[in-house]
Length: 188
Ligand code: PRP
Ligand code: MN
Ligand code: MG
Picture (tube, rainbow, N blue to C red):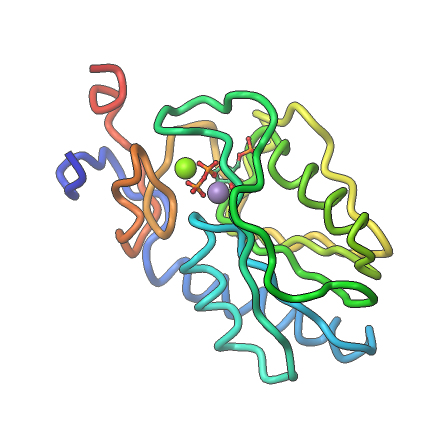
């Protein structure tokens, strides 16, 4: 388990992702220049580590970068209730614009709880940049605060996907593309 032979089909290739991330970075850069004040990019560990790395390298405005760790899936394929912050921010986000960076919005629980958390911490606005959005699985509406914007790479069909940061049982995160995992891998 953990190798490319477990992938049924590639949904977004390395080059699809690269092009889309460039577009998102351009869009965010344009909005940053009009927002004023300093912006903190917060990657949601572990899944967002590749997206945030690729994204911030395409943004030339002065920004700061931090991570927050939230877990809700354990090692399975289903969300198991309330997400838990298991590693907090290093930076103070009071009075800052925050761009939360995610790999995927599924039920919306992770982002909703993070947005309220950041709002409580005094962030001026919270935007979200996620590579994938799976609206068909939404359980909780993701409400942005302080005029924050939503930047989505691709609307993803309802398959269990891995790669480009996304895991099954902590494996496959290092694949450079997003692929559909063969169901026999997680139904065994
Ligand atoms: C995954 C994914 C998102 C979240 C989305 O993280 O990376 O953070 O689930 O699901 P939701 O919209 O239903 O909340 P996970 O909890 O698996 O942790 P990981 O990033 O360490 O894999
Ligand atoms: Mn995650
Ligand atoms: Mg996970």
